[in-house]
Image 1: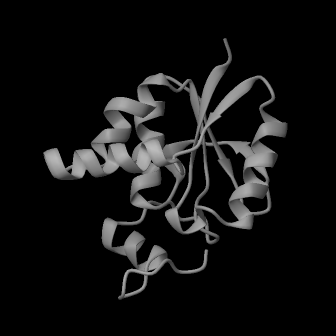
Image 2 (image 1 turned 45 degrees about the vertical axis):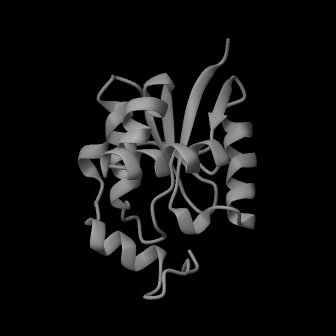
Length: 139
């Protein structure tokens, strides 16, 4: 059975050409891993279920998704800052002793020390992913 690699990335990258290119790059860099992409209907449904039932939608990932992953590759914003949710996902995987990598928008993959990354607050993250009307902003 293949190990599972979580691909954490900002939601304004979901369903874009960049996401497709990065998924192809990840598959090439990690050929022996199965990639778990959060941009799937089942994950949207799980997130909404936790939001409705607990008021803590990110717990869906930390409780139900990430424990089955053996590592993670994460996309920070172009300036290198990590979104709050992406960082939380990486932290949950790293806390179990699993490896963490960063992938840049150019497809460069490297091992990452989470203690050295710059993490945005939730409001700072929201400002980068959605406009005031809730529409996704360009990555």
